[in-house]
Length: 200
Image (tube, rainbow, N blue to C red):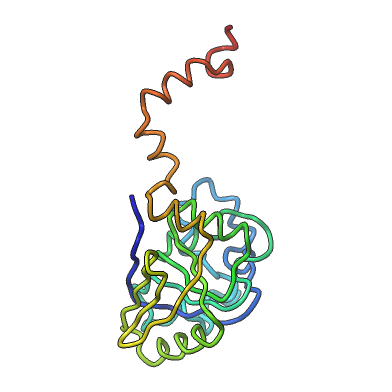
C-alpha cells in the first residue's frame, strides 16, 4: 500500500528525549504477540500503581480517536525495541510529527508504515498549542509536497529520503513485497539449504 497522505486528529505528547521505555515499559515486552500492546502505550506515565489515571494526553477524552502523534525532540530514543512503534500503531497512531526521532525507532516506524516527519521547533510548538485548543482539528500530512497543513496554515517538513521513498512507493511492507513476487520467492526458497533439510 502506497502511503502518500495521512490525515486525522492530533494528540500531543510534549517533552524531549521520551525514550522507548517510556513509550512501552520493559515488562510488556514479554507478551507473546503485539496484539494487545496498544493499551499499554505510555502505561507508567498514564497510570498510578493503584490503576488510577494520571494526567496524560492518552487519558484525555478530547483526544479519543486521534491518529497523528505530535512530539518534540529525540522522540523514541533509547533501546531499539520494536515494541514501541508497535504499541503506538496498535493504539491507533498512523503518523508522527516531531522535531527529531531516535534513529532506530524511526526505522521501525517506517517498517510498520508509520511516517515520522520532522518540523521546526516553532512549527511543532504552535501545532501542539493549536491542538490543545481545538482537539477536533484535522491535520494533513503530504509526503509528496512535504507539507503539514491544518486549518488555513501549513509548514514544511523533512523526512529521510529512503523512508519517504518506500512509503510513497508502497515498498515498506516486506510481506506484501514477498507476496507480489510469489513465484520468485518460491524458487529462491527451494534453493535455500536450511529450508530443504540441508540437501544439496
